[in-house]
Image (cartoon, rainbow, N blue to C red; front, side, top):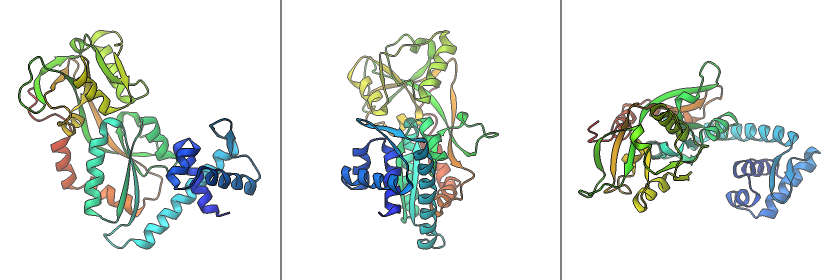
Length: 319
């Protein structure tokens, strides 16, 4: 048994929560992955995986082995980066997670970082806020882009690096489309938006919590969505295809102008909702060469210029 490879399979199983998908991610057959994990169980003398008709999680012993596996693989990656990188030329993987509404900014960050440092191989994942925080804690992620308000810096081991502020817009089909691009309209009160049929992200998303909070502040009641989804693209396509409207941040609409062409965006006011977004890293972890380069880029004037151009308020917003 190759212990190192078997531990990789175990971590993949935790990442994908499914034997078949974990095997595909590891480029092996499902029987090969299952046999490797059984060999691990024989080696450690305990059950690692709760088995049923499908993957059912890890045993208490399995959770301890999984945590050790992540630490070992992380140390291996750190060592490998130290050995293969040179001054100013980092080489290795960078795992970057982001909440769905921030994925356009995360994608821009990853692409520009890779262009600056061709030896860095970014992997971007769209995740919920809970998944981001767990991923940073258990070393499944190097860096995350998420909501700063969820992090209590006095109690958390997460370092918060402010990036931009989300502003929210109602996206709808205009009565009379004008031009080819995204149309901008005057501001709209949240209470007025509450009267429309809405397509919103599903309740497990923190973005939905923010939107529900704004509607409750404006109306004193909860709003029932006509359509719910965990897909950002579905929000925009539902507006285009049906009679629903949706609530989206400006940074996302800025990146989806093609999909939102001939639709109408109006900034939501009363109350004005401004949500700080931040890069998050685990402060207690020794940074890899790739993470050091990513942190340096995040602090650069080049990146700050990109944020000013592509995040926050939409161009042409009349307020």
